[in-house]
Amino acid sequence: MLKVIDASGFISFQDLGRRGYQSFGVPVSGAMDWFAYQSANYLVGNSEDSTVIEIGLGEITFQAKQDCVLAVTGAGYEVQNYIWTFPLWTSFYVRAGWHVQIKKTSGGNWAYLAIAGGFDVPQVLGSSSTYIRGGLGNAIQAGDVLQSGKPSTELTKLATRDFPVQKHIQYSQTPMIEVISGPQRDRFDNTFFENEYTLSKSFDRMGYRLEGKAIESSDKTELISEGMTMGSIQITNQGQPIVMMADSPTTGGYPKIANVIKADLPLLAQCESGNSKIRFREVDVEEAQEKYRMMMKGIGNGK
Amino acid sequence: MFKPLGDSALLVQLGDEINPIINHRVHALNALLQNTNGILETVPAYCTLLVHYDLDFTYQQIKNIIQEKMNQVNDSFQKTARRHEVPVRYGQGQNDLEIISSTLKLSIQEIIKIHSEKEYQIYMMGFTPGFPYMGILDSRLEMPRLQTPRTSVQAGSVAIAGSQTGIYPLDSPGGWHLLGWTTLKLFDPTSETPFLFSPGDTVKFIPEA
Image (tube, rainbow over all chains, first blue to last red; front, side, top):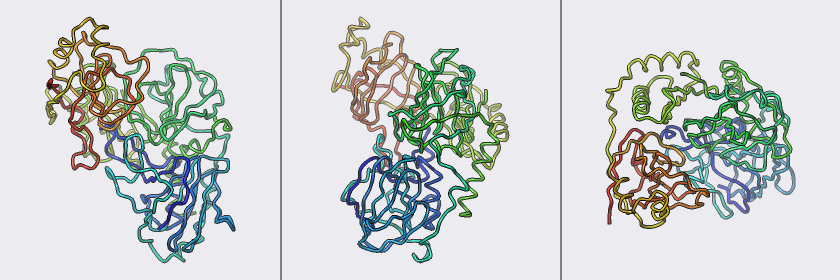
């Protein structure tokens, strides 16, 4: 059990996401960085769909009300208990009464806090993921008391596990993001793939608006709304790309030049506004799927 | 006709216009694909069906499965579509009836009559949980979207835009012109049946005093 002392930024509960309701217009939600989310659960011995806390562009301070094992993953954050600093991507033992603070530094946007046993949060439409715009789930505020479930084994066995994150993913502010050509790729030339883009100030869990050289369209016919997913890159009428993220609406009406591959979504999610220089490269579906499978395997083995 | 949308979804294009027959085929294919091995979730839209698939299957395998089902789609397909009657308090609460009336040179009574005369098909759901995109609206009622969207539209508001009509299920921002509102609850996440409508259903508006 953790008591929230202070919280700022976008702080929410997230899990694997809300599946099965997209045809009714319900976004999937879930973690912005699925790799960090799954690794956090692995580190504390949770099942892969356990509920964690996602910290976005802010900080959270809490007090442990009983002994527990925690892990924080992600990029651009530090964890401390006023005396020492806990490394990210390692599980650690916290004694009842300790205060812990997770604070934004630089080099990323999102951190994931997992507790051994998982956070015990009511599910809505089969998921504990918070989707604020749709009124599903709740934001986390100062004063909240966060309950957790039963750890999978003794706490001492779950503490000080680490994860070789560098072997699987290299978070970077100058990433090469792999994409698959989108349904309306033919409308555009290669501008998007030949130039650098940065994350604008306008970004949240729904979408990342990028800035860079405008992308001209050869076919300006208005698109009839069609389904889209996290990673879909829509080009607005002004020629600027918007990458749809975890809370993406299920359908959209701008043409899609490409879709970020699952394996690279975490890299993009952690790109910072103004600071990042992002390039995009087209790959085929088979390559993308293989890359994703390898990453999943890495988490499963903890190696 | 088949295009990948990323590495775990595939977009099936059945046409390129807003047309009830094409949309009917989308819902027919959608129904045939439910509970199919390898297919996780589908998102029907006006003339496309987005299919999310299991990565234990290759893109080609999923394409073959869908192709096979497409051969079974025919226009006599009857979905288990339901028909809903929606009572509307036209001209009550937030509404734009006067602006619509002066723009379209129709009286408020005529607007209500034209809007409530027809039975509409739910082409797709999106925008917010439970929002039905319905058509085809009588061309006499075609209004553009608001120049500046409202930052807050109240749940239950019945609205029009272009050749479409819809109902806002939640308090949300919105750019459509409003006709009135319904007390029906379109989305209740705590209910056994969270959504009043499903894509493919039909809706008839009933004017209420």
